[in-house]
Amino acid sequence: PRVAVIVVAAGSGTRLGASAPKAFVGIDEHSILRHALGSVASAPSAQVVIVVPAGREGDARTEAEAAFGDRIDLVSVVTGGETRQRSVAAGLAALWADVECVLVHDAARALTPRAVFSRVIDEVMRSHVGVIPALPVVDTLKRVDGGVVAAAVDRSSLVAAQTPQGFPRETLTAAYAGAVDEHTDDAALFAAAGHRVVTVAGDDLAFKITTPADLDRARHLLERSRP
Ligand code: CTP
Ligand code: MG
Image 1: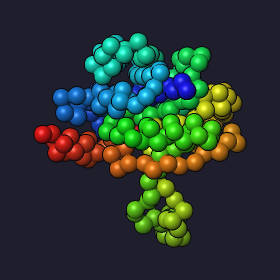
Image 2: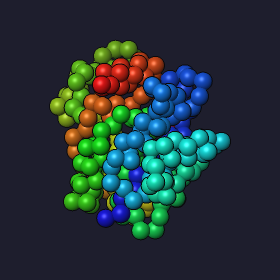
Image 3: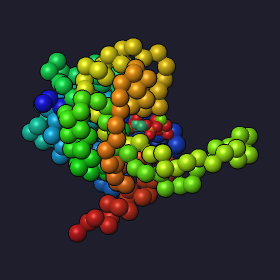
């Protein structure tokens, strides 16, 4: 089965507030993008499409060469769009003809373990539906209306969605072609087109680096994993 991974890295990182686009911010001596590509490179894929901000294509290729070595031929670099959804669409447009299964992954989930990729790929191949890694919600959630707590939310029926999210390629491409609204993630867009989405186990390490506190967390995790 031909698997492609689209790594979306074209965001600016407003909430992180660094001086460079988020994917190019260092965690340790390596950038967020480089760490993300390290885990993508350890997963079994036939093509990797990296979607980056305009002007960063050369930097992305340098990071990819470091992560993929002599497998660099499987990497394509494309320019992203104004929204994440447009960036994913740009990635989909660069897929090779024979790709059957596509995973869409946030570069910002830089420490995602290889096992998550494997679980998603295996489930797409087995069930031919959309697949998302998910974790149980640990916080107590409230629905509020103007600052007033309106209702309790039953946490048992909720999960937190992560990436990589996997899909049969043709179905995802058609769903994107027909999408009119902006959706929160690829699974939402896929489901809005009438397709089924199931979950596999996510991983705490697949958290998204969004704020400076998240970047600190990633730094500490990497420091602790050093010999
Ligand atoms: N992304 C993208 N193109 C965009 C917006 C986001 O490729 N126009 C990517 C980001 O690079 C990131 C992933 O989508 O890897 C998840 O988005 P998010 O964490 O929101 O990143 P940013 O949009 O960069 O951050 P912020 O919302 O704080 O500006
Ligand atoms: Mg964003």
